[in-house]
Image 1 (cartoon, rainbow, N blue to C red):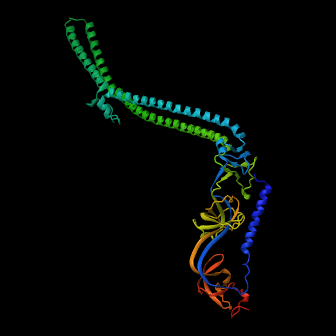
Image 2: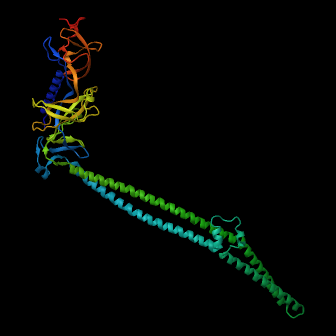
Image 3: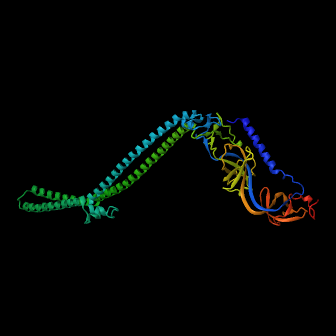
Length: 516
């Protein structure tokens, strides 16, 4: 693990390199002999983008904390340790976190999961019980409807019961004269009418007997007592007839109307009760289902929390899954994180170790926004590594940033730099992560173009471009594309023209040419 002094040394080296780069960018062109000339030539012009960056593995595996809460490192393998295939087979531990608090909370999560599982089972059984009760209550309501309909049919007959099932008639007593009348009412009417008819016959016989006894009494054949007895029997039969007629009238006006209304209302009430029973059954089942879903959700959450807790405990030990060299993931200065070491607390998903694939290397460069449009994927690049002077490597633009990098924006918000990744096609054991390299990206190649050195062209205050003959004569030209060394001439020169290698300064220019 890198110590603090080492990190300070690295920062000093980086700062020095940045200063040297800035000085190199700002220094004047190398001095050339006064009066030196050159001949205008036609040749290919290569437009390039040159930036410096550092090497890193083109592909790497990040080892990060999979614990869902901040965890403190208890132990970690030393940086630079070589992980072998045997270490992978043996499950060598790379990082171990403190799992004390997780172990203490495991029992609580297991208890919650078991309790919620019991509640879920209870809710499942309660739903089955509720469905059974609902079926029983609905069957009872249906039977009551059937009984009520049968009672009405028994009272007035099937035909009339079906006819008056939906709405009662305006005159219930008139149903007694209806030809559809049947059931017990028709039998009661027949019985009452038969009683009246029988009472009339008895009254007539009593009257005939009284008349005959009266005639016998006039002839002194019967006693007065016998005459009075027959008269009493006549009056008794009169009372019986009156009573039978009144019973029929009471049945017609009161008893039948009462019984009909009661049974018709009972039929309507049982139908409404059946509707209510079904609605209550649906409501109770929905409530039981809601309770079941709620307890099932609580059980699933408790089980998920328990599984996550167990995974956190298992993830407290990170084992080797591939061979390679251990490299600690350094934090950025603005992240306010300590170095990777025992005792450091890391956040969830925070990268701790990187396993680089050293067989393929790349250079990460930051391209200024003024040049980013000249860079495109698949472009060829020439790479020079500072630690390997005199050697060049072939590269290719693998990825071009689409938005400015945030790494430098915190220092200078106005500076817009884009990260670009350049793959190195060559392989060399000397290429290691962290080495400084200069990348020259070939943006465009213009064939067969007139070109002159950049320092031979002077631009005046009005933006016009001039070149100068050896005798000091100024020639206006139209310039085109350029690179760090040469600039294309679109108009104003011919191949072979002899020009001054260095354009004179403004103070050296006179109306007739160049001041000697």
